[in-house]
Amino acid sequence: MATNGDVNTKFGIYRTLCCGQEIVFTVGATFPDCPKHPRLSTEWKPVLEADGIIHLKESSQPKKFTPAA
Image 1: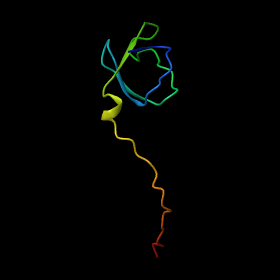
Image 2: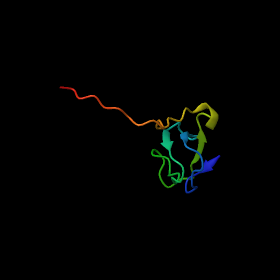
Image 3: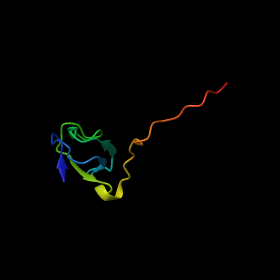
């Protein structure tokens, strides 16, 4: 479980244990204080485990554009 000030290592949605606030965090983001309880120790728990999150990727094939007019 992460606390405020930790650097995130897994992309996902995290929830505070104190009041249930949810935020999406990218890899490398720093966990902040709880939005409702600033300057207090905050624990962030992942809402879903990493394998429950669907990651979208760009297609390796070039995109074909058709003119609208």
